[in-house]
Length: 113
Length: 115
Figure 1: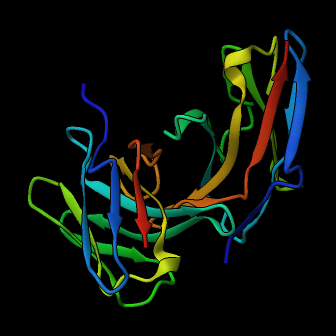
Figure 2: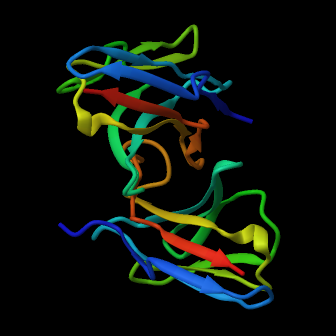
């Protein structure tokens, strides 16, 4: 079974600084998708960024970018120029064709002013 | 385009009762998934429906069931509620099950409290 591991239960960053959240996954599939979701205290899960496994280029969405290392099965999220509104739980997720999303346990990000 | 709508937002039920939660997906999305979120267990997958058929199922007891209607709206039912069923129930919709368009968009959730 596929598993997703987020080894950092909590992280903190100073406003305007950069922070990297880690995620590793285990799979024997070759075709899959990886996602980062953000869940603020309002509790609605918001899609931050997605990465197709067949693409070598790392995905980027404004201040959010990923470092996708397929061989190492690693998928980290970098948040640049951190803002107070970035404070939330961040979940790494994996999905292969025809299968359900599998989530990690999450990383709680605190942004200090 | 309207997002995923879950109703009700909050619910308080007594042990032994049953409850039905509703989810309306984004227009055009045919896949609906349900997740249970608790502080201890995190996000756990319940089931996924696509075109009225259950495509994937998580490891939950038979007290948890769901269905999807022809308009893609989905309902989730929990019978004989237990205290441990208290959780945030999240619904997500996607265009397809896996592959291109598989990113899931979530509703705001239903907070169920069993007393």
